[in-house]
Length: 91
Image (cartoon, rainbow, N blue to C red; front, side, top):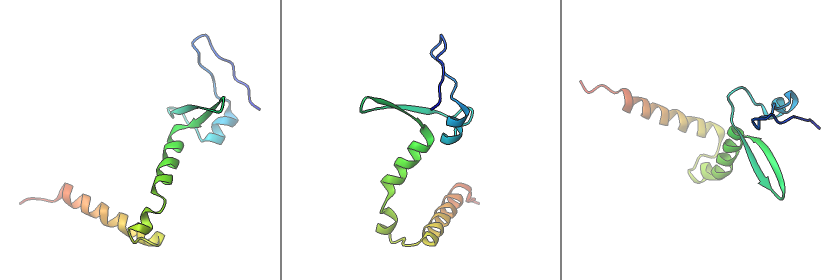
């Protein structure tokens, strides 16, 4: 269990072990989520990434991308298309 003190401005210093476990660095954003009478403290970026992952479950298979190599190839093709559209010369 870790302990932190609240300053007069309502600020706390997150103990180093908690920062390490949540992979928090200077400038990162955190979320406070109320759940069943408790407050959960989380790394906002990791939480958002996890939600995106959950939303994408099954999407690759539905698109016919059945292996990691197929997904990687598809991403390369999209990047190439974007690059060509952005930097294609009209002369």
